[in-house]
Length: 183
Length: 398
Image 1 (cartoon, helix red, strand yellow):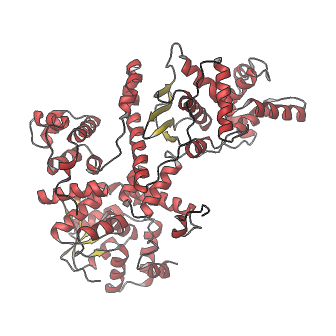
Image 2: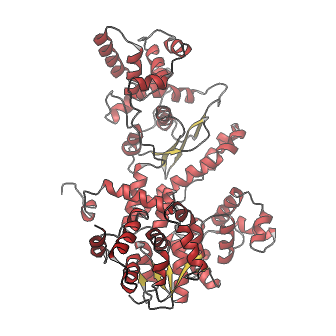
Image 3: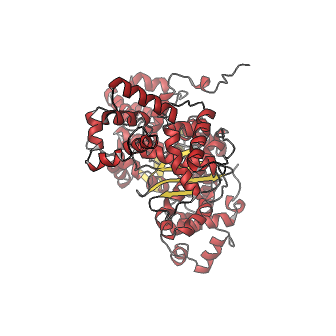
């Protein structure tokens, strides 16, 4: 799963999933592209990340630590065109986080990481030439390039399932891979 | 492809109104807001009046300053008459109430608008089973209240049994939007009617379920007899109650505790024990899902208990909750959710079918993303026995 662009921009679903996994930093480190999150997502998802934090997993701090280490860049709109596109997308998607992620990705020709079905279909329509990745593809890639033990991988997926309350959709291409590992 | 600039196609007057509401909610002056976009106060005045179009950059800055989403301002939403307009006449009589309940009414309006938006997204408008408005000017008030209660029970096929699932009956059998909202304790219920939305009710979430059921029945009478009149029901509202209000106050006892059923159960209990005891009173109140006080007054009114029975029990310092616990009486069955069940199902269907994003789903449910996932999981588990295709099958005969 090579990332075909210089940057990969994460949406809120992926941020939450990676945070819940307990392996946020290793997952980011395994990616060849610079990983980015929008300022809008950072502001809006803090509450979820704070709720995710418990005594054993300091997920919000991992998120902030990734930013501090430069593993995760926070990007805001750089010009009027990006802002205009963001507002246009928000009117259609009704979701500021996905709209900001899509607008920046489209203008800068960056790959996007999302599990959101509505956002995926919107993004495919607006920028069919850009690469779209899912949380599971990125985690699978991490497991492969970093030679993660099966116990560690199972633990990360299990955390995403129980703490992040995420499960792939019934038509997800990696559903059987997920099921084999988690069940 | 998405158009060049969506702001060019939005009604500037409506956008200005929304921005003004958001600014006021944040307690910012026009001068404060003008500074946010590096403009003169007169520019902001023009924007809020809809006389000057906003640039995307200005909208983003204002939305951030007001702590709001951009999509709150630019997303197409169903046009309904602002509740503020409906309730203006109510406020005129009760100025001091306006301040304390205004935010609740705005919240109520937002939820009703969301509901309509979900129906439009899913192409599934709420089915309405509304009777014509009842005329009640020919009968004495108590007789009118009982007659309407009987007619409605008959229309809805409810017999004379207790109504443990009153909220579901109003939502699913009649088509009224019922929300349980946080509001100051002295408020019991807000009732509103809009031709597009139909009837909507907000019930005080802080009250016990018996009281909430009473408030729902009270609001239901307003729907049945004074449909288009908005109602704000709170303690100490009237020095002299108007007839419409006295009718609404008389209605719940007949609707929740119909004479025939209550009489039958009273007779059964009395003949089984040779007397009707305080324990019987508690058991029966629990059975009907009403307070002991409401049942005692109802039975006093029917001549089944001596006048003053409840007053004597109360003066003896009876501890209602303790007695209920001692008797092992379960709390009245109810669904405490803030949002109507149909609203929640529309939201999960929209998410499942990829018609809304997860973030928008969380917004509809007014929770953060993690909680939204938990709720989605719970809602999905209700339909776990069905596969995706069969959910949408038309089960009617060909």
